[in-house]
Image (cartoon, rainbow, N blue to C red):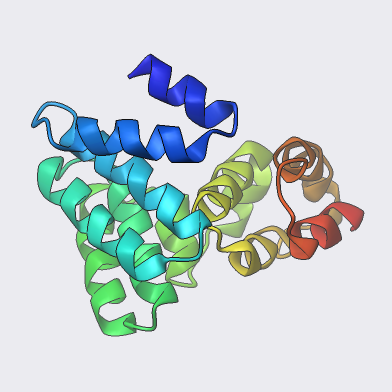
Amino acid sequence: MSRVIAEEGLGHTRHAKVAYEVAYRQAEFRGRAAARIAQLQALQGDLSSSRAFLKDAVEAAPLDMRSMEQLEAATRALGDTTMADQIARKSLAMDPMSDFLKEETRSPDLPHLAADPYRVLRVAAEFMNLGLYQRVERAVTKLPRGACRSIRTGLGVAAESSSSSLVRRILQG
């Protein structure tokens, strides 16, 4: 599995995807492999395929909150808000402190997020992993300017590999 992660990190996404697909066929690795394939599909702009893999990831690992959060985000991005709301309610019952799901359901705890900018960075990074850059902007721009400073620093590292003009606008302030 570490070889796959290295391939992906080097930008060899085709090789990484093939290796993840091999891991996906093995019960032990199915959940995480499905989640990684879903992220790769989303970054290529194929959200419906991504959602299908995220469903498999949640089925294989029902307690994996990140997969649940990403399934909710992909479902909402595809326009199925009723299903996304159901997934969010179920997920928030499992983890009521999920900043990502609170942001998705438009009920973020702004004082909580502002107290630690890395919380916002985690939400932003999860949106970026799914190629949902407009949501990154929405999440980050709600915070006071002072809180955004360190978030912008963290996003700068992630934006180096991103071609999104939205991420660049966030960084500029």
